[in-house]
Image (cartoon, rainbow, N blue to C red; front, side, top):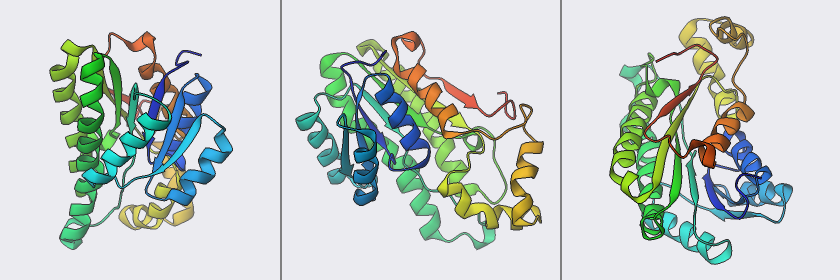
Length: 255
């Protein structure tokens, strides 16, 4: 119970990686806000996880919505000790077919959303001189991928933001780190299977086998793999880590 008595916000927590992270943080003793653009799905997840889970609808790309999220959490659960910025969007689109709306959506949700959530919770963390922030980047935030420009740009940006915040807020005892998962076949990724298959000229049912063949550990990353790293970063065991972007890629990326 490394997080007993602490309050956490996990964005995009209704399903996939976010849900796994929320569940793991709760198993470590934290009370967790299940923050998601889909309030009904957030409530369903919170109901399943138990009384220390609070469902809150949020649009991370909107400042007023983020401020309302943090106010609701502080009112019902207490001061925010931990923020996990997981909400995100992802599409595979050939660059010359990429429209401005898709580009803007990636930057607004993945990068601006992380900025807004960080800025909002950091005000209280600075006053209390403690806190931890974990930002979800990606292996595509360290190494570009074709037909993935908007996503890569946003996730490279998340790492830059993470490092900058780590430096600025270290004097207040606040740590800021990023997690860079590899392929995790969540509902979000499953929607992209046809896009990835077209990109690689593969049948859709061969995509997972192809991906696994490129991973040294020989299996896909799971939401629970990511959740385990998040739980470590959230704990006192990681108090001397800040500004890091930790690969969770099964050896597929080592820098």
